[in-house]
Length: 477
Ligand code: MCA
Ligand code: AMP
Image 1 (tube, rainbow, N blue to C red):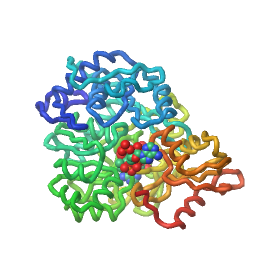
Image 2: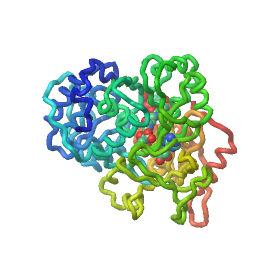
Image 3: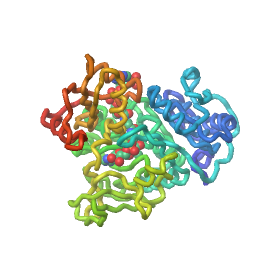
Image 4: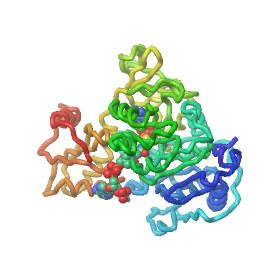
């Protein structure tokens, strides 16, 4: 059975299988349009896709999967520095875009326009191979390409179908970006494997979620917090079957308000680009606020102390969460150093997240081991990448970036900058937004004369975070 097992007509041809950006695609039309693109890309080593939330992105992604060509989603707002890195590092010779983006900069790749009305014959899906190269941030340096196999994606989606009782009767609704695991793999490939239909709302606004009338809803905590603050929108979700939160911690007050207004205790699940979704509460089990539940089918977890010894499952003692199983990636593209660092000698993936496990097996994520990986609005952002972009500005002598607690975004990027010439925060924010992705821009810039450092000269980020905490709660909204 192929990865896109619901696309081949096994569940019949729903006329409205995929709705995105106002376009409605039946499975038959999606298969035909993707078949036409698949014929044009056959044999290519990789296909980059300018991943706007559009029908063209869905068609191009499905075409890559049908043709056995690894898909490399490119964030549509990625500035020149980030886009060039993704295209060159992945080696993708083709960039698929919608007609309106035909003139886009592709850094040596050939631009391929995708037309959802084109018709061709879908080839038989390959059995194995790399499905995606997904770019994601580390603590330092440019984003790394994570190699996700077809087998890992299939195992990950099947595990979620089991945990969430996700069936062909479901209509999935979300408005998340189509260049990450959450929006693209769960949110687009999920319905193309499991069946049922997808409504992508363009943006994940409370009003759009309320109007969509789905059964299964996905959101990052920022989305759920905005829904919970909009009583009418939240109440409109009462007829749904399941609300699922992930990509960052769901604050307990948001969980509780959502449950009170919608009548649904949300499911919380945890994962990473490198591992897909590994932990979740279950549709048929307890949905405990603040907990990400149990390992999904095919995944094992363990907690390890700093000295490598096992940590007791007493719901109190923290350790590094390590995972193994069928959903793990095949490593980072061309980065054996990063592979070696992220895997243990016995093959477990080191998540870098700190967690506790209770005697009942329920997991709680306590935080991240490194202050340099920031989660803002559910986006993973490396402090080092933002600092490097800031240092490229002629008026910046040095910069240190932290994720400060934020009521809306979970963490907000705050940049402490030592200027070398006259400059203001707005100019620096715009500079980062233009070079990297817009969501990597600092939400606040603090100009300082010096940065706190230890005897080795390393910036003491904990001290910057203490200063943020002392300044009181913020909300970027
Ligand atoms: C604002 N804008 C700017 C600037 N400031 N543009 C250029 N320069 C500036 N200085 C524009 C933006 O382009 C955008 O415009 C608009 O302002 C809003 O931007 P922003 O404030 O950043 O958006 P937001 O509304 O605050 O975003 C909140 C959000 C978003 C919608 C929740 O953070 C989001 O989509 N998060 C999802 C992240 C996610 O999917 N993560 C999954 C990865 P315009 O309106 O024109 O676009 S995690 C994963 O995959 C794992 C496995 C997992 O566990 O799930
Ligand atoms: P990404 O690779 O963008 O998916 O980011 C993965 C990271 O998101 C993980 O290492 C966690 O730090 C964080 N994360 C994802 N889901 C959750 C969750 N439910 N609770 C807490 N952190 C989460």
